[in-house]
Image 1 (cartoon, rainbow, N blue to C red):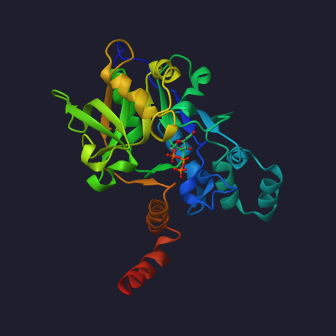
Image 2: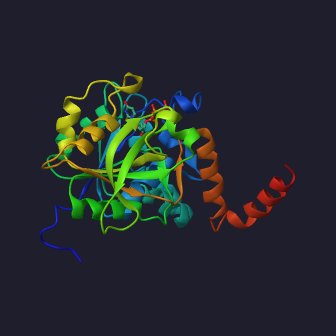
Image 3: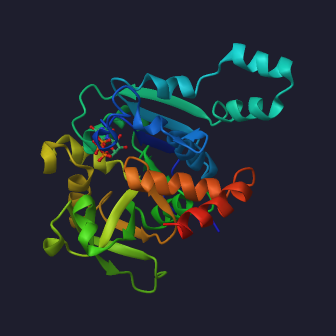
Length: 303
Ligand code: UTP
């Protein structure tokens, strides 16, 4: 039940999509990695649909040079709609209209790709002084998982900021931000307090095997911290560094909790994870699954 003394509920979402996508070159030389198709929808459409499903329909997308296709994808194409209508292909018509019915999408450019922290700072004016969600444009959470709604609930109850963590093999921690956590007395098992954060540590120096994944619900105090956060790991302004300050500090707007997620998640900016997303999601689909699944079994058996 929603209690009147709770903090204001998150309404806005920021989707950073200005990164260079170097892990997916040459495919991303002239095309945003967020436009790579996962089955027949670009990865970014899953992310915007996830925000909408969680009740967030004020979307600010952070784009950059070479990312025009992102804006075009969420715009209408009247000539195409008319021709599908004339052909009576209402299934396809519905599919292309799905992308334009996802709420109010605003765009702003990050002029220089100075890092994820800097991309989030570009949202300051649009967001104002209220809690907001950040969803990375290349990070895909399976549709049936209600991670974002859960994070919004936790933020509303506890205040401060909320991140999402996932257990990863120790050998892989150096690809992520990694958290040190403590348990919350009397709280649900999957909600922990974050005591420290390190961006891409070496395996033997990581505080845990709990990796930060691309979902955040942040207190606007993060903007004040990002304004004075210099370049960190990889010479980029890191969101993890600002979150570390929030985790260690006390007072209004400080404090970081995490929801430990154990569902399905794919990093579509990573080639292997992208391939897994395409195979898993298409084999679960009613139109493709029945033909794909037996083929996959034969294929795997012959390996
Ligand atoms: P990544 O770590 O995936 O970096 O960014 P990248 O540059 O996009 O991709 P690679 O590593 O070169 O292949 C994490 C998220 O932060 C956004 C990216 O778009 C992605 O959603 N980002 C990163 C920005 O919006 N701006 C930046 O300056 C950097």
